Length: 185
Image (cartoon, rainbow, N blue to C red; front, side, top):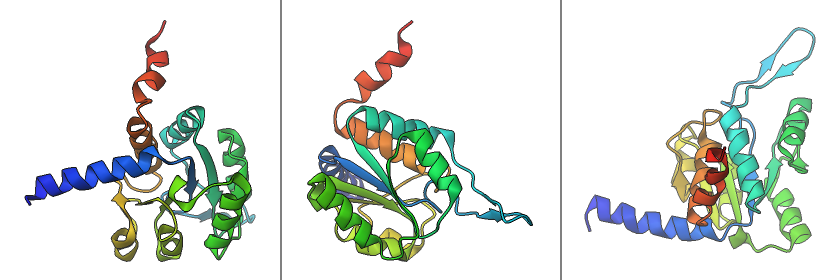
């Protein structure tokens, strides 16, 4: 099988998995941000979020896909960004991320196959093994990328989340109807 035909087969399998996703879970540092953590002398923490990632999340939610955040760190900045995006399921200081995954699956009556997860580091691999659609950002470490079903073209904090949101909306067949409203005058 040629490299291009192998990609098409993998691509169609990935699209089928994305089509059935009801819940997207995001890591924060390295996924919603570029992984940088800026601290000042006053103890304030700063993170940079990409505006198009946020818009992608809002479109996905509008299409009926729920979104959650699971992160190992605790940050008021994350709470604020989640509120801005309408994300109510936020799990911070979560060092064993599968515990939060189990809670989400139980709370929302999901199967693992109905959940997607975007991560960037080896702490995300246990979740990758339990969800229906696992995604690593382009600049994730190699081990994490090896365990992902999809690796984004974009880097974490630089449009990777938007890329996944757009991919999922297209796989679900709702992309055209979602963007039509932007062209109406």
